Image 1 (cartoon, helix red, strand yellow):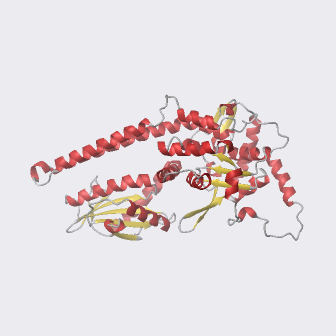
Image 2: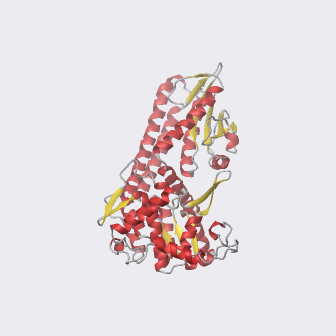
Image 3: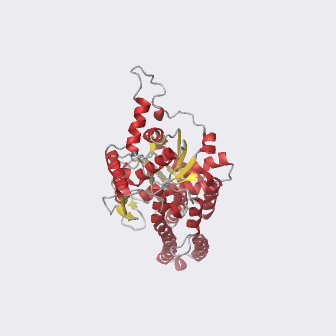
Length: 492
């Protein structure tokens, strides 16, 4: 893989755009006025039968940058199982030059981000421990309630927290350090040695592709147009080997390099693995939630016309690993598939514009708070609750939040929220406590219900309640779609 920074493109007599025009003319220019419609637009036929068994035997597997960078985000076992799959396919893998370049440029940023997570988790645990101690002091339990052995609870919690922190330390030992020798990087470079595409020959080659990309983005021609605003909030340009690149055109560079490779090497079957979930790669429809059909038809068409690719398949990392079980007879654990899935979901959340995410989260909370206040009662200021409402003879606490379908995030957060709410009910601070979730579709309700049932918390009061409502983009109000006792939702 070290050679990735050295090899220039061979001189080409025509640009990719000229090739596309030529091949399109060859393919369609001689059609008679009375041509058949059947089979004329195969890229739009989602029911087309693909011989996956043959594809896995004969195709070249091309990987996007995010797939390689995810190796630094995965748990150790997940990382090892994915690397084993890559090793088994080692004679049939390849990456475009721009993937290799992006990997080298972004590797340390990902390592830094992962390192910060450990620090954030430690701070959260310490904060919870302090809260428990402060709550005990506030209630003065040692003097006022001799029947309540709060000391044993705090001791058990401290032991549990210490055990968790020890596990966290062990996990952190498997994470790459910024200045330490990077064994993972060496393994990736060994796997892709002599399997990296050539670099652009000069600035004009890159600039011509950028001009083409600019025109394509205006008409939302995939891929890459979803990155068109990457240059609005931060510098977009960077220099490598004297050539100026723009980050917002990265996907288009990867795509053109893939097509050029397929054409020049006569590779007619390509399997592309990417963790990019945006609509400028995937064909999506809203049918009781977003449904992903497959690659964008425009990509399938260009793969055929420009790259000469007869079979073009796209997978996200989870699907790639699942199919590896079938076609390579490789053992992939359910834990690995879950880790891959959760990492992909977290990547989607991470890539959302922070301002947009914050704006939507605040708007959703405001809608939910308006609904709660419409039920009556008097708001009482209290930092321990999103909302605390006082009625004539009881108090109700509320936790309001948008739903995330990441199992890893949900499993830890639902336990923390429910146990905290349960304490408030048992100590008499509130008589009822409601967790209010907003979701974006009916399908997300089903996923939320599945997770509540999959990760139940024991010993929860029957006055801990749940309300779930759908907030569409155009909505200005929130109303619960489902509501009831937590224990009923959790199957208790």
